Image (cartoon, rainbow, N blue to C red):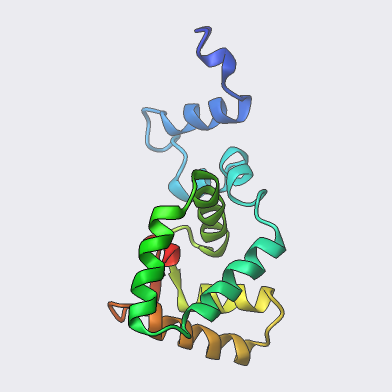
Length: 150
């Protein structure tokens, strides 16, 4: 790995790549281990503040108050107006709430997020139920990334 390209890559990233590219499956890093690797963790957990989390969860809570027409109009505007920086921040917030890293916010993960905001477990469950009534269009009991961006 003496290539000039690799000189610009962090040691943690290189170490992860080496573990992921092991030919022998017994020596290769598992997906759970890879997700817990310091290089991955530095992107997932370090950039979301409790204020960002609180604002996003508050917005989810407030979003349920709009009727269908207003939701459709807001979704259209949000998709058109979201800057790359905003989208990056929303992704970081989504990832911080997605505790099992499956790309979907489950009922339980959202309850935990509202509890981090200071609500009791009972209050959190009520809020998540209300949010899901308005955002969960396929009645899956969860919100995927696109639903979160709405």
